[in-house]
Image 1 (tube, rainbow, N blue to C red):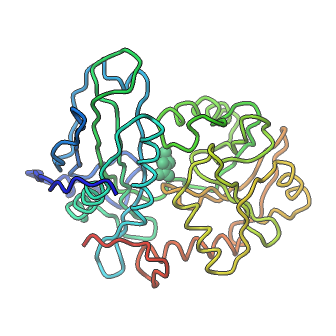
Image 2 (cartoon, protein in one colour):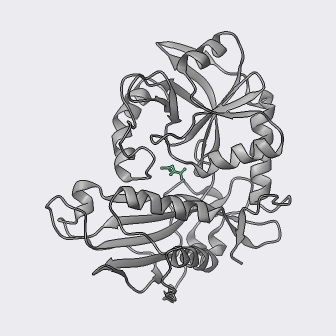
Image 3 (cartoon, rainbow, N blue to C red):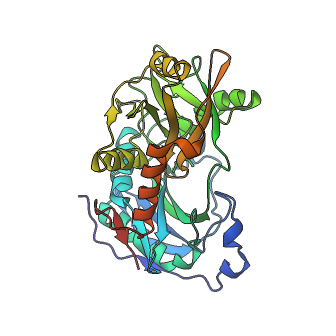
Length: 356
Ligand code: COI
């Protein structure tokens, strides 16, 4: 563990904005809670960690990040538990993944203890911002970016780590219609596919826009070399249920190691639901669709949790999937995941980290 042992200096807001916020009607990613965590990296060292009121920041037009996208982020959630407390879902996984992304993007490692303390302190301070109800959660966005005022191409020397939070409800309002992408690629071997870096998302926008123009919510990404194997769905990992087996693509350098993906695999093992982690070909899934053996498909991610796929389009043909109320395996796993996160059932995996 990389550690600095530094204590966080906290400056509270003079007046909370919470009273003016309707937590029952928040739009994903548009509402921000009162505080944010800020820690700079300068002269080869992390500086004093702070928590300050959430506010806009000044930035030089020459900030390296704006030009060459040396930036990484994470997404995790805190939940209100059935006893009225607050708990983080598997934060250690995000901390470790962020440091792997940092390595790939030539950025400094973040001390794990300060990162964890920052998450806990921030959520504790703004725990009243966690919406209640079945879909409510506090989405937490850690962000690390290159802050040097310099436009030559090289790794930055200075960085800023921010963590801020958003009260959220569902990400998708409906089941998603997706299209199998066989022209554009999200990632390729040796690239940055498994890093959670801004550029991956920027590069996905144009193909996603073309698909949206055709009426699809998302893409099913295929591998960049042959376009014959599935990788991810939009900004999520993807699972298929063929007959009674769940199948998800293996992570082989081009696919994000999703925390929700891992949790689904672990729950499936626990519940003795057959689950295979391997290459999944487009042919196998399209054949299963044609034969009525594709019982379910869904995206898995922190923001959306489980996003049921309503239909899959391939080579201009749209194939519908069974109604969601018939998808007993994915519904069962989704329910168990949700109940663990909200403290409604015992957490057999030790995933929840209480903050309050
Ligand atoms: C997440 O699910 O946390 C993501 O990072 C997806 C997204 C909102 C970019």
